[in-house]
Image (cartoon, rainbow, N blue to C red; front, top):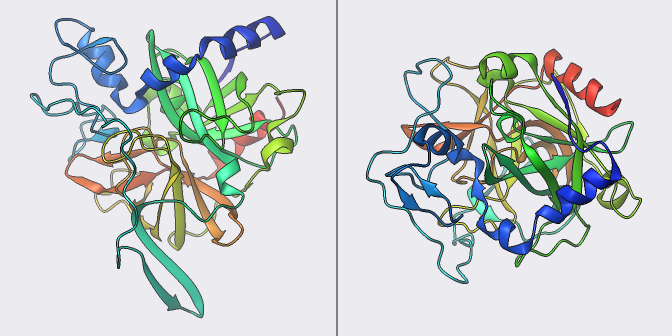
Length: 339
């Protein structure tokens, strides 16, 4: 499924101009979309975005699925959950002594962490970025990453960061690669020109296909891949193995201001409800759409994207699930790189 976003230079300018520093700071994690849209914005409390949200709506959840699942519907946060405002100047947690375990397996270093600030640098700090978009009249944030493509314009994110399942497409969609604390945009900002999601996501919000791809406009006459580089992307790879997941979680204990990563061994969905694979990960709302890189070189920051952050089950907040990139996602990619 395809959607034409910004058609003309005037449209590009309008979208990029929409995102003032204040709007970017107030944008909500996309994972609250279900509660906001179904809550009707009536009779609730005012959240940090300045909108009125449904009673009990909290920032502190990711896109949660109930277990056992009842179709593809998202689960709202528990009623009465208090909204938590990030403390001014609060920083993401740093790796504690022993929190990052390093071990040798098959003569190769393995790194395991459920959520640490990425401080090593490398290409991933440029190819990963924050996404800002509007859905149902509300401003949201996600994460995304660039991938190698023929048009040098493609970024990959979650499907729910592009289109609300069977609902509307996102508006004002903008990618900020290498986003840094305080709203710094060292490589500019890029508006969407064409957006793509898999048919099963658009028709029924099928979580096996929660993938979106966006062909971007240029910034200062440069394609995004020329400005920041692009990770490789692969399809129908072997399941399991080691992966590094990256994103910009925006709910406590994180603030959305720093790149955070999880690393560990992938495992199949233990409930058999999806073909997704799970990664031990404490990242919170705002990390949706962040890239999962296999064969990742910790020293250089290069790897191959084979999945992305999609959802968590409501009874397991420590495992993130990501869709398997098979033939359908390959077709999606082909359409995006030809746009």
